[in-house]
Image (cartoon, rainbow, N blue to C red; front, side, top):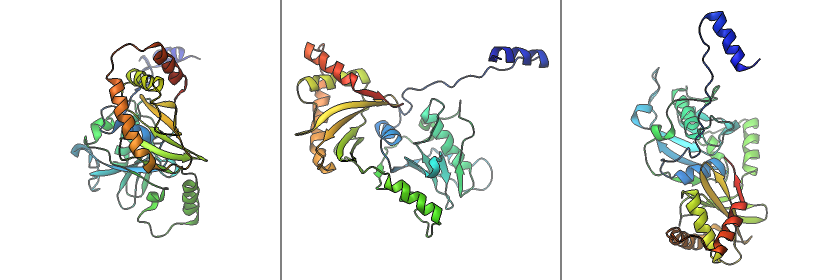
Length: 301
């Protein structure tokens, strides 16, 4: 039986029309407007283990009921144990996870709902959202508009910081998660760029906040000019599309370190800025380069 038929039966039985289910609106660029938007996207999609401390706006710091202490600061984490959306630890600290399953179509609203639920939760309680939010505040409404200071970790020991003893199952789970972490370092010369090693290959994955079409044109201009790399033996290999941003990826020499990429990344940022300032139509070679760049894109979210 279709939804329309069920609504008609409900209206005949009760005399009242049954409200139609409204699908939540999809937000293509959910973290837009947050300081450090590109880092939010990177933590959501490409960084394995990292945290950042954010501050709540005053009106969202205290639980609606009870005498729980106000929460001013919250730890944003890439992943929490068992992929919980959020957690209020026994010591009262609130952690919210970004890499969680499912979603309402607006990641900023999903994360904000989990965060606010943790503020309301008793200490020592994980948050599991039974229903996805279709309305309510977003991260842009909940957080103070301050820079995002990202700290990348070698593993997930931050899950249990301050805990003196771990039971066997918790220790085993932590060791398993740590063993799967991809070595990752955030560059300091540019924003939202992450060096990593996957298998025997090194890469740079760099979330860029520029409008997609303008960014693709600029990368195409650099590619056609032979300037899209990050130095000798490096190669631009494509980009992820994630939450409305592009995350370009470069192949690096296997023995390269994050420090080796700092200066080349800063130089590329300058070349990219210059290329984005060009308003002339793309040349034939640049159009061909753009087609190749676009063909190597992959949409994550």
